[in-house]
Length: 239
Image 1 (tube, rainbow, N blue to C red):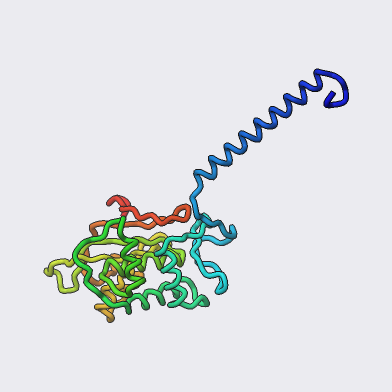
Image 2: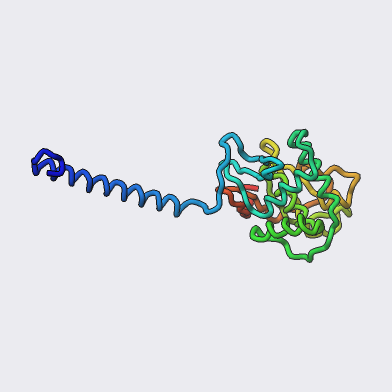
């Protein structure tokens, strides 16, 4: 007998146990396959203590890690990380680094890109163009600044509408700007108007204190989830 007892009942019990064990293993394998199929391909988890900031070393490179601890591999995010590292000091506080990057972005050349207003879908391409070509229109400044603020740990968004610096009766020109959340408030960072009006401070100013007449038509907010960047238009009630 297989168990050395010569008892057929013992043999039957052992066979049953083996079959039950095989079923359990098969179930576990199936569950693992389902979990892997639902996981995001290419996501990388890092130290649980690293959240919503740039991390890394010179030897291994630097990356942005979202609030879930996932490395974000989007090209515009990587470009924003490179821009921050090049144009700000890691010894400074986060808001100081944001200001340094703002000043550096303002120095990029203004270039008229047509009158088409960006949608949520193509904001990322505006940022990519600005980081690569170092020139662009107000929408391109706004998109790039939003990515810069994001990798520095701030919630950010892009607003589009109109603006004028020519008085109360002048027609508004199409315009876009970046907004950064500081505490509970959304504050404006307007790189393109800053470039044209160096005597004004347009870095982290409230809409009430913004010195020019403006109109908001749409607001696009950036969210980062499971290593992916998503842009969505906000409804008017949530602006």
